Image (cartoon, rainbow, N blue to C red; front, side):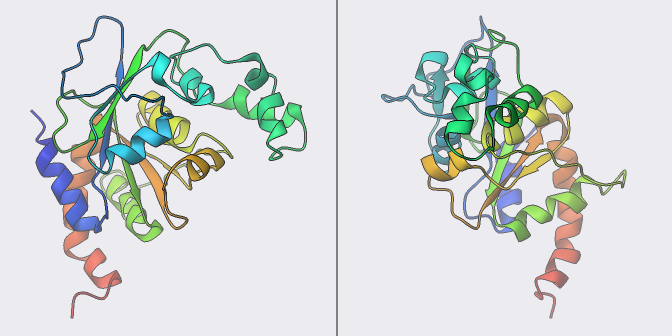
Length: 235
């Protein structure tokens, strides 16, 4: 059994995060959700739940409580609205030169099949009851950077990052790590920066649950030497 409480504490301590890691579990039909996780009174977007969970909230968000159909549709909770499919919705925000350009972003995004999930459960990793599918960190670029040497510690290579102008928390930080089994980083997006309290200088990382122990074990080693030296704390 993975000791997620201890892992959460170590991640915060080594990286110096302001807020603890967040656990996300996708709920499928028939799964039971413990009463510790509360359904919010008002609808919330996926990015809002991430930012609330990093401050201690334990949330259970059924499909009808998701406040962003763009995120909810990528998570397999609802059907993608036609205006989103066509690119009209994102083109109207004036961040694409045409509906076709916006449509290509939607066409190319990672997503779950509609109806494959019925809810999301989002909470601090520390204290999480349900087994997470992905762990999300919000932090400064210097802090998030150290996940890269930890992630490549055993096998080397490079970290490929997939991101877009929209969907930093739902696609970049949640769906891509789950579907690919690989860590992904994101600079944030229009939606999360407009809807949440994420700071201008903060970014995100999504680590698939199956990789977490390996990453943290390597982070322990990196934290004892390279991090101390780079932060000039080894004197």
